[in-house]
Length: 171
Image (cartoon, rainbow, N blue to C red; front, side):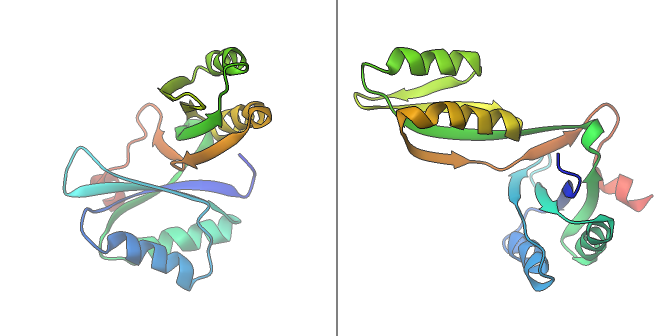
């Protein structure tokens, strides 16, 4: 990960308008969100937001402080790159004429991806991994003709005993 790139995770109330308030805080202060992933946790009343941003130590500190001020935010953690498992999901639809299907299938196998839809003129492939893996996969598919692509944005979880909980925020 670039030196000025960072990930943060937040536990928030799983209610309407929370994402608007969180993203609004970024917009009001002029911080760009490079990637955002949101999903319900094991507790249906809590969602986890993973946000990828750029900024120096001061910017990181300010974002964390401002997020903690939002009433719907239960906990915030800067993710330590060396102690985090981070993944992204991508679906890519590629032109897959009969003449090139075998080559595309080889690329899919090499990257441990999965064909999830096969049509007469196209193939939709699912792949998960780190950003660099997904970027390399896309580069290998460009010659065949990418018809459509969508990515989830990064989601991350701490390794070992690094756990984001509401209780960890109170310490």
